[in-house]
Structure formats: C-alpha cells, structure tokens
Image (spheres, rainbow over the protein chains, first blue to last red):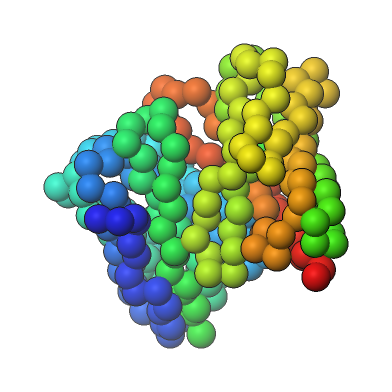
Length: 113
Length: 116
C-alpha cells in the first residue's frame, strides 16, 4: 500500500458504547504502534507490536483498552465502555523494523458524547 | 523518565524569513534519537528531520536544520526561507535507539503560522 491507512476517520460514540479502530500498516512493516493524541497535545504512546506479538502495552490507560494484531498485519484498537475522556485522535504508525522511521496514518478522531 | 518540552505554543514567521522552534528534553541516557515531526491540519504526521545523539554534526534537510546541544539537552529546529506550506504543528520527539520498544515521546507541539 501507499501508506498507513486508518478507518474510520471519524467516529462518534455514546458513552458506554464499545468502539473498534482499524489500522492497515505499510505492507511488510514489522513494527506497529498506537498513539493517543488529545486536543492540543502531542501524541502519547499506547502500545507496540512486533509482528503479532504485543511487546509493550504500558501506555494503555485502562483495562477498557485492548489492541490486537493477530496475523502480524492489520491491527485493531478496541475501547470498551467508552468514556468522555477517551475522546481523542488515535494515531497508528508502522515501521520496517524496530530501528527504522515510523510512518503515521491520518488518525481516527473519536468523539464520545 | 524521559520528557520533551516545547515552550513555544505558537510562533509566526513572514514568508521567506527564518524561524527557530525550541525543544528541550530530559534523559539520563547517552545514546538516543531526536526528531522533528510536522503535522498539517490533515493530521498526517510527517518526519522532517532526525538527529542521532552520538553524532556531533547537526542534521540538515534542505531548508530545515537543527541545533543540537547535547550537554544542554537542547534540540532546536531552524526553518529557512519559510514557505506557506510550512504552516503546521511541529512536534519534537525523543526515542531510545532500540530494545524492547521503540516508542516516541513527544512534546506538546508548536503551532507555526506563515504570513504571506
């Protein structure tokens, strides 16, 4: 693919609903990252995959957040029982390997009402 | 813990002029990477320039250059001959060279306006 793609681009959820955000990394990229960007802030790390293995999930803010990458390609970030504080842009990035440049997707803007 | 600080929430520059964006960071590591990312209103984050801490020479990429002061833990971005397309949010970021994770630690950003 030409770049990292994310879907949906915009998501509005009522408080308490579950949401699933998708990331399609660049083909062949081993490493995949999720970041959360609150309004007016810099992105903050959520979790990291190397292939299908989730090697670091230290940034996930609560057990309502869950990420997976079952076949080492597409990744899904799931948020259960959404809260208003979950409103943010969720960015996905991929890189060829651990030490290479991270390429970012356009993000998914989540608004929780 | 590593932190990145950008003390200029907003900056403005005239087209064709030069502007410098500031960044400081805190780390106890000796080997690391520093980056400047550009985020236009469309939100796609783009890498502008990177610097390896072990390299004393400042990185340059066309109109973009950095002033890396390791002892002072300072990493500023200079944009020369500013263009309207340079208007965006700029983020300074830090990363360790490798290991169990490769996460980027970002500052809060500087919004750059370019006046015609």
